[in-house]
Length: 184
Length: 412
Image (cartoon, rainbow over all chains, first blue to last red):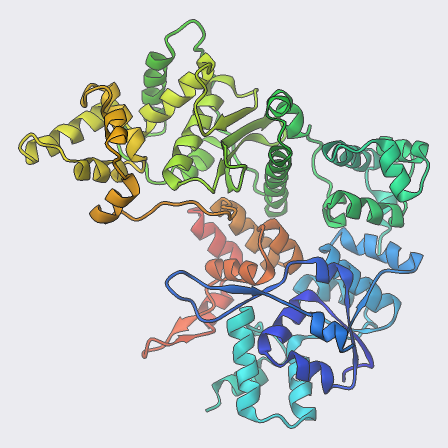
């Protein structure tokens, strides 16, 4: 399922980072992972732990080590076609999302996003673009690497706690997620 | 996909770009040089006479630090707030204030954009402007405070949710936002956006409340003029500012109600009112201890000079509040957006009208905190018999967000 070149949108990147298995995900899927510079410029945070009396604590997402090790590469809009696509998409989406989609469309990359509006735009206008979600990747990563159920559960739990991400009930992997989450 | 640059109103976009350039104090030549285009090309773009190219728009977005998504939004043409505040800005010579005023305008425009997405404009129920010229501002402030309280059906009761009252009953947009420390609040008015107020979230909550009502008083008398409330009162204050200050005191602490409560406490305490009683009374009215003491002095319920005496005796208000058990009302550097604004943003996100990135930008926060705000409106957690939070509630998930938001807003 993962294509050789895959671009990650901010909403899914936060989830992978929150899982605490980002390193393993980037290393063990035999895929080149990219993000756009607009996503790096966004202030991305995850929650530290469960809510205390003072509320949640947050920490900034730091990606430098992934860039250094080339596990994650930064891409920018280059051609006129990409810049034109970006402008047309930026009318509908935030700049980071628009840039991510533009590059995925233009360079025929697979895109990882959980954003409802972004997915809708791709389905309507660019149905050939391969689009997957956080759960697709988590499942693929766990299957390919024979990850133990308790580890997958830990990753999904971390995503829920640290990124506050709960898959929608309509998600095609919701039952997979629920089964893992409810497992002992 | 439609070619947006061929479809949008170039004049509007050009004007937006011109405002952004002016706000950053850049000349056309400077911007043209940075983009490596002729100055005449930039002039034509700003006039809407030449179609902007995608790379030019992207470069200008970076230069002005304004997302392309926002540049392409077809908001109603609004005169920049900074023009209204020009005189004050000239006096203050404060670039942070200018940036804060721009952010204030963006908040107001974002609010209107969300209302457009929801198809629900903010109803304006503006009372006519009151005349105060050639009249005693203090006496007029007391009269108008009483008239407004009655008009809003508040009587003499203590105000618990002022922001909601001003927004829902009058149609004034009120935001909490970090402002330069010496600024307590801002007021601006345009035909498109209506009356808009910003209070400084860095200041204590009681100060913010007083500022909101000060600006409300300003709205009642001189709504076409922008206003900046400074933290320290200026001895050369205009009659309008003196009116607005007094109006805030009278509106929050109506004479009859305050006198009654003061005498009740005095009777219960056998004639001896303590600082602890007054701290509790100030907390009851959600005003600062200083505001209450000065108001009691004004009503001759305390001797004139009481506040000054307390200060000269080194009375520590915060410490005294701690002893009495009154929670600190310190400010923060966060934005405080109207409940209705947040509800519309969540509704738009849940309906797929805006993306998560747009949601976070509209809520002036990061994505994870934006997800938390979504949770506030669409509860996704159930509590098991053991008290454990379990992360889905099928009942609430199946309930349309529109219903949730409408219910939260108290509508049918």
